[in-house]
Figure 1 (cartoon, one colour):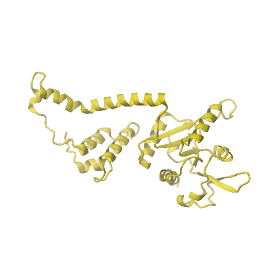
Figure 2: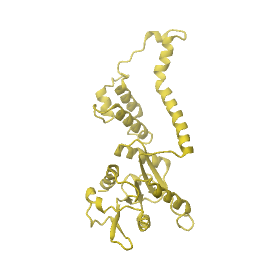
Figure 3: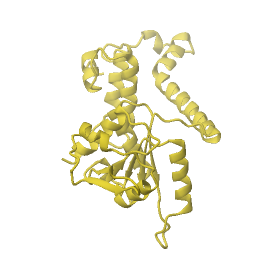
Figure 4: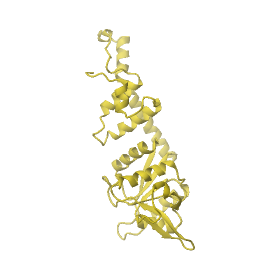
Length: 273
């Protein structure tokens, strides 16, 4: 290689502190490699060099052993093959294992995610992947699922049975940690008592109780309760998303409020200031 890749430069490329664990380095490398698929700002070759350098491969000083050029299938050539194809062999093995594991998890229905965000509207695969890697990086989780609901029938605009079945299963199982929705949908769910009261958390978000972006609903027999907050349409959700762009976030009643949820909500709010 023309330019020696140092560990200092490698940590700078991965935007990590040298004190970070190797697990953290690996997680950051995998996240950047996924983002490189759809963002030209991430150079997969440079990212790989940086990762390999931290893991012990010196890209600046490697010099082939003269014995590698000898004729015949000898030990050095075998070693040479494995040295130069280690990454391909690892990637191929990993891809094979992931495909088998994914098929097994799909068949057995045992896919587990660290965090799940459900969105009202249809998303493309690239949109889902873009949002997933964004939030994996933001909340420092390995597996974030971005799912979506197609609410109505195309002919009359009514709520479809498939939507209701999927939503009911989600709410009963406590699968989603956050909903990104439109006001009509938030009101529909709030009337059913399916969304958590956000009032106790407004101060943590820096939101005043009389903020005009708060969506209120009146629960029969109770007081007016803040259930959702408008983050607008300037966020990551408006980049390439097909269909209706949701404008509010809300927490499902069965979901547990967490630091990750607060981080995402604050990020949505800050993007729209």
